[in-house]
Length: 315
Image (cartoon, rainbow, N blue to C red):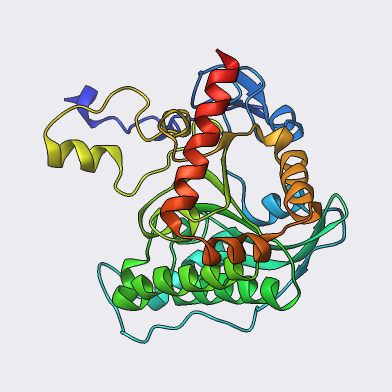
């Protein structure tokens, strides 16, 4: 019995397996080893496979805004718990925990900045705060920055990274979809551009509202963009989705987004679009006047004739 009565050796058992050592990490996409410093210098993109890792709200602002130009706005809106919501944990406690983890007070960071010298109203969702979910404060801050853009005649850029509406706020969260969409409609009436940038992941009520309403919709490579996630869809339709479904490349092929932009080129691409949309002379009023003066059907016939003439010329 002496064998079984011996004290167990004091050996430290590692309960979790780590994928990194001495500053090295294993890419979750290609499984290649890369150094953390190299990953950071490459804008958190894998240098081997170009997998785009998530950025925090602050990192995203540093990526897009000219140095020292970002001024955060509407920080007076703070999260509350009007429903006293409790699931496995009280909503109040979840908010406090998310604030400590992310270092931010909410899931949206908004303000004014310059992008290559162009004044812009910028909004960024931070996935590290409760998965970037859209609650009342997120909706209010985004609506406020859109209205700020209208008042100051600025283009609006919103970068999305979100799991959708925040379930702990119930109908109050869902109302943010209508509120942000209404604000963007007013921006459109003013003739000011709105550029929507979709990053991994963008889903749920965010995809179903302001994220899909951009005049130009850009996305990062291999970003998941959907309403319901692929696992949920497969359970409902009882079929396997095709490879790459709901990824940005798939959505570009189907026409839901306009272009896929590598993170290293995102700021330059946004600047090109902003300069094109803001600097070109726009004659919407005269065009609208022509439409009102002429019957729509005759306008359509003229358009079709122009198309036919162009086809004949080409042939």
